[in-house]
Length: 542
Image (tube, rainbow, N blue to C red):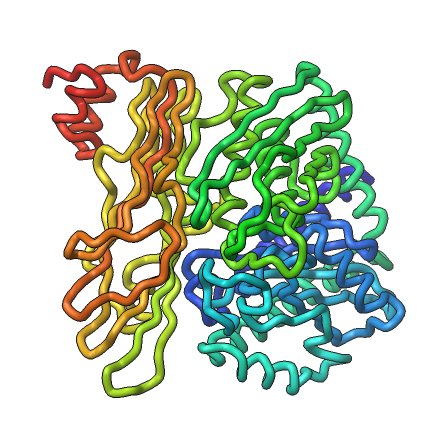
């Protein structure tokens, strides 16, 4: 029976990956189609996540692991029927901010509820002030969709769709993404029903228990092999107007690891606060990839990682705190946790990296008074150096999303990307060098004005090196005339000018004096490190 269960488990993984690919192929927003800012998963009738798609982000997947239980509670199991589709963008019951729409679909087989499919996607606009940190309450940040029915027994709620379209700047894109989310769940639903018919199963309960119990046991075995220890660490990050301190204490136990964020700063007046569901998602992710990376991600493997944060801190913000850019702080959670883990598990975790995605959004308005266009693009800095390897250049960690191609960005609206390339000398020097960030230069096409919304971090507090490694380069935001702006800012771009961006590099690992001379020569040859920096930081003699 265990062999058959393993085969069916692999089948579920294939189903959810097909589910995710259906979303990629049908979504309207470039954030989904090009960057993969999405998640897809299958759940048993109790709301336990059984499998997730490889395509997707930990912030979506691990938060969505809890979200389905909210759908079950709010909709009511007894009211569910075939053809139903449920939706929300509630930050405290979904994935942390209004710009993520989560859709949940119940699966009925032989007239019985057997499970759920759920998926999430980041949409380009949700109304309000627009995607940025300027809001001072949730009400300013956009259109809120409480947990409700998108479709009732197969009939789409046209009133809901009309309300959504009336409250967003890009109605076709946002409504199109909502339908794509529902369609991708339908793909998973059909594949699961086919599997149940093939194996002559009435439900997936026995399989669900096998998956959850096996994953839990494997994770606990990995934890039990660790030393019993307790360690604390903190990080200072840019915040909005004032710096923010993220602090955590990690403690290993025989059957679990706890991570508490006591000592973290209080909430911010602006939209960088983080709902607890998102904090738990990235806290558990950091612990799991360090301790049990080979165990599949599901409710069982996540259960031994207990993540808490005091209510009223920036990592457990109360409603209606503004949370639009919750990822800018949330993406720094793994580096904070790694700082504590490094004290318990030496030579395991990387140095600090860029962490937060280097996102920006622009509004482009034609001079003839036509309709404005919103363009959102995802970009990445460098990751921190690893214990035995250099960091990765221009790689989104921990989010895992892809950098959007220039062609896709320019196709989405009247914007020109004049430059996009690796940033020399941005990786922190060390025995192993930090990954490089990027340089970008963007501006509007002729005949258009542009408003730029920066959504960055690591400007005043760049990624730190570890064990003698040096810091990576900080973020830079400026106009082509040299006028500089904060990491989180909204500003017009004067006609004839462009925005120049430099994204941070990762921190180095170990003393630079211990770097292999051939590795330094290779860095110089590839243009990763200038000759001047190689001589200064590594004693390179050419």
